[in-house]
Image (cartoon, rainbow, N blue to C red; front, side, top):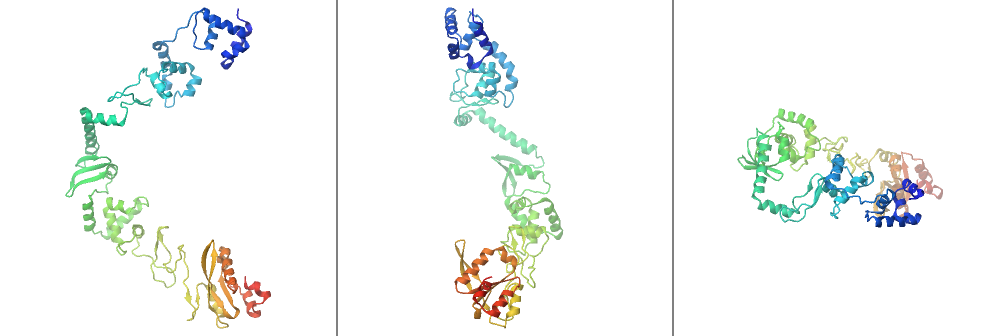
Amino acid sequence: MIEEKFINYINNTNGRSQSEATIKKLFPLIYIDIINWLKTYNLHPKNFRESLKYYVNNITVQIPEPHFETDYLKLIEKYKHKYSKTSGLQKPVVKNSYKDLYKGINDYTINFTDAKWPERLYLFFNQIKEIPLCKLCGKTVNFSDKHSGYNDFCSRECIDNFAKTNICTKNKIRKTLFTNCAHDYNEKYPNFNYIFEKNKNYLIVKNFCEHGDLSISTSMFKYIYIKDDIKIYCEKCREQFIHNYIPTKDDINFYMDYFKKNFNSNNSKESYIKKYYLKLYKCIIHFTSHLPDDAFWVERIYLFKNNMLHKPICKYHNCTNNCTYRYSNSKYNTFCVEHTNIMGHHVSPKEIYKDTDLYYQYSYEYDFLEKYYGIFEIKSGIIFKYIKNGKSTKYYSDYFIPYLHLIVEIKNSYLYNKDVETNLLKRNSAIKNGYNFIFIIDKNYENFNNILKYGIKPELSQLAQT
């Protein structure tokens, strides 16, 4: 009689706790009894856990293996709704949650050692016992997916060779291409009464005009067919139309409004408009005919959509130069080249002070000259070299006062504080070359007047550097 302690252990444990090694260690006498039991009744269980099942339940007859046509078909019927889902029956899920199905699949596909889990699922649910062979060479084919199953051919080479040698396949391909072309274009676009041929992604319209056939992309043809304002031209007909068409003032006004409503920076490229909107293209060219032939298209577009017959005039006082178009901002600068710095901002030009050899640029320099010119000699500034970020740079000082050996740099507080480091490098370059130096900021002449009154003395040397 089986010990009650062993029976309770089996009922309350599972997994590794019922492994052969564990039972042999905990219940050595019962382990020997199990082995003798199997030999006595000539039982051949698949594993030790099944041996425990025979022993505990006092089974003396071998349990038959399940038959595919009965048990496996029941599994297929039970789980086919899960298999039909896109991500159904993943291996970890089946292994942990549907153990009967997992065992059935592994038993059925035991001979397909190289097959991965998706292929095993396909074999099991479609009751396939052998991998299909290539229709041309007879080699085994590869598995695609659970929807497509196995490929018909083993390689691309076999596909091509089969298509070349099989007359029925050739005729089928030709018939399909011809039918699709006729159906998609001759029937789908009945108002476009031409003969079509298809070449990859391009559509060839036979005898389109006096210049011969027309080649156009299929996607573009479908797009422009539904557009009432687009007419298709071959390249030669297009050039002839542009040359002969002379827009009126009403045409230009109409297409100005049309352009503003229907175009933006993404669809206003010259090649696109010239190819499909010929009248609009000619209106833009005609309207901006005052520009040189090599003018950029974006500048012509800007003038056209803003109804500007001429380039804007520089807003600097009494300047009559044209402003330049700034492509980074897609608009014209406010000032001309002469009155615009590299960043596109307005700068005042240097002007001569009262027929002298001195120049001023802003009101700060002008105020300095108004106060002190004629009282003592003032010369144009001296050029110095200084190093910034490892590069040699030139510093053009404002003014030089010889009798004080003094460099005068005039600024407003904004420009001084904007780049203090560079201003101090400029000052140090003048001092290293043996010159005295002073900043006059925001027309504050207090320190400068002290230098004029007392000269450059040791106690005033600090004033001369600030």
